[in-house]
Image 1 (cartoon, rainbow, N blue to C red):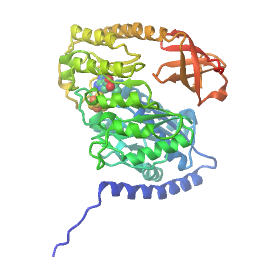
Image 2 (image 1 turned 30 degrees about the vertical axis):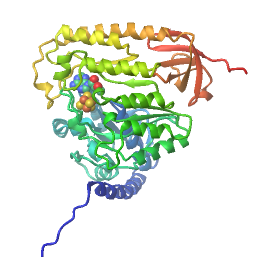
Image 3 (image 1 turned 45 degrees about the horizontal axis):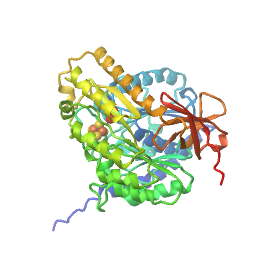
Image 4 (image 1 turned 90 degrees about the vertical axis):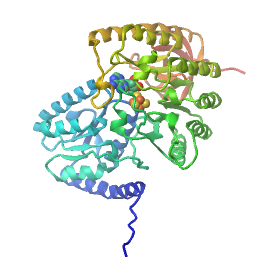
Length: 481
Ligand code: 5AD
Ligand code: SF4
């Protein structure tokens, strides 16, 4: 009789692999101890979005656990790791320049290990090019197998040739990876991975795979721990946080998750990104309004203000639907601020269509705008579209948009003068000694004189000057009863 084979579930495979990584962490540690008479140093550089930054912190966590310290420049390092971004062509070009630079360094220091990971490593054309022309690289680590870093680094340490592991593995989440956080009071927490939207210009769904949400109890546990450790700002991350919960056994929406996070005891702020307008519900806006720990800032990338272009982009909302959402948010959360991403010069976009984007920017009144000239990404739908407008012309449009946005945000910043706002003191100001800087709930940069001891604390600041992209202020006088 034939015996029925039950294959292990992907999640079980990952749990098993994670167990094995503990063994490899010890093995690498041992190898490094034999190879170096001092602590070896790693230089890690991350390109691109907040999601990549969060991955970079996990890779650094692994490196720390394997015995590495951290170098501030590649020249001092025994291992260089570039965590790459594939969203625009420019970033890719820059990376190849950077890998090129490492060739000379490796000639001086043959034992230098070069590791590449991140979104670019999920592109076959990229990994082929590296294998052919950039032989100084030791390890290519794809985004779906990041949790196998110790095992693959061990392999790279023991072999001479390039180790490549960039398979497409979907629908699995590796929980409990080590993490080396950059800040002691701001932390990002990934709530979901991947993207299902296939906006016609975007490479992310191809390199990051399909959407998959973390279990709510894992997220709540992580946030609770962070708050207990003294973290004051939690940034929830996902390509489209509004579709959080789809595919989970438990019936839960992003708004419901946000409410549960808001209910965690402690004095802290919660931000999140990114919200796709097509999935941004009134329920979510109401939730922001009702949850005091959730920042009054909504990043709602519109990409274009013209309906034909939005359709070509496969964004699945119209200008009017977007503006209705903005109006609802403005009326429900009176002190809300908006930010957005915009692509200028999408294939076939005319100047008149671009002007619709310009008028939308003025109508919404964004506090912050991230503007990009369209960049062709092979393999996407838009890459096959006619793109007749010269790059120089697109650059002129983008400048016009930036000027319009300056006028909008200058006005918003001026209106802050005289007001007292709550700010998280995040860093020392590079501009002036004795000054700190941070952001308010609306995400506006604020600089003010204060002692370093206040770093990581909420402070009340009275704004004295509302300038371009920054508010200057003084600590508010304590209230007397
Ligand atoms: N060209 C230009 N900008 C892009 N973005 C994504 N793909 C492209 C592209 N091919 C921008 C979008 C997105 C942001 C993260 O990057 O505006 O919201
Ligand atoms: Fe790219 Fe669109 Fe997904 Fe954002 S929502 S990652 S722009 S495909």
